Length: 418
View 1: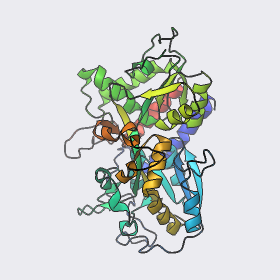
View 2 (view 1 turned 180 degrees about the vertical axis):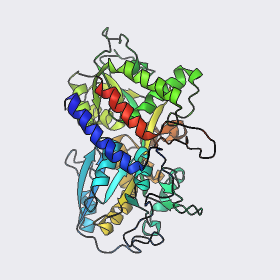
View 3 (view 1 turned 120 degrees about the vertical axis):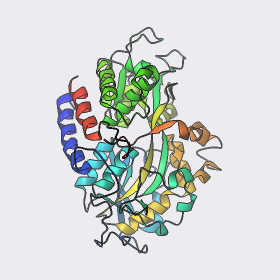
View 4 (view 1 turned 135 degrees about the vertical axis):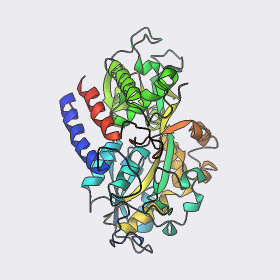
């Protein structure tokens, strides 16, 4: 896309995001918004009480690399066996950002069944009434999920305010965003700071980083700038990169405007980013382990690191549309997704961490050290994506933070000003 086409596309997404958020506050609390809507129209009853015969298909919105059928690499296939066992044919729509996922789900009533939503989208989907509670009694493997994820706040909500928690999905995978870099450009050195993407500097190959940097094409990337400022400008007092005062938010925007002169592309398509790196058009960027694994596996000279300032990250949840056209196949897929072999194969392919710890033991593709390599010990050090709220995630504190809608409008302005 040209920058103006991309700008128009982002503005279109923004209008849908605003609808999902409901108002200018950006709050995504459990009450209101139709979050408890079920197919029967009664929020006190589960959508279905037992899983019946599959309807023959299931439609999933997913991140690139999350639903593999062996067509990319024959060793990575957790779709074919599911289709053979259940008769549910899997179709996948790939999304590049959480905002795109929200927009697709908002538009996709009666079209999509499931979405692999990150924490910066999940509660927006709940607040917008777009996803329904999941009946955990129908997910027999749920008890095998990592205990740190089973009741995580990014997909569980007290919708009625009575202390009863509803689960709006099933954990899928988690991990950190990483700094991907060309080992040729860095001459065998390992960059230790996000400064290489935020500040102009000469890289070890003797060339400037200007024009060879990429940044994520999503408003949640503002948190990456805030995390860097938390370490480098402590006087700003940033504690949570998703709960920013106006002063802190403005400082993050200033850093992103400074970064703009370094950017060759704002990426959201994982495969386009890989092409840019392989072609030498980019040498350093925030990225996902998926891209790093993919191009390293192709024998290319790239690597990644979590810099000293830490990293943002994602904990993704498979969530079900309130008007899912194939609920039986959807429940069958959610159960299948928690199989340790599926979890381990996916973690090996994507470079993520399984939601089911048992997947770390004995998985042929992941290997004995795969979960450690992918960062299972880093859970407490990751700033997981979540939707910024005006109450700073502390409703009784009186604090005021910049809500997510303003993150989107301002990030559009940053990108549009290139």
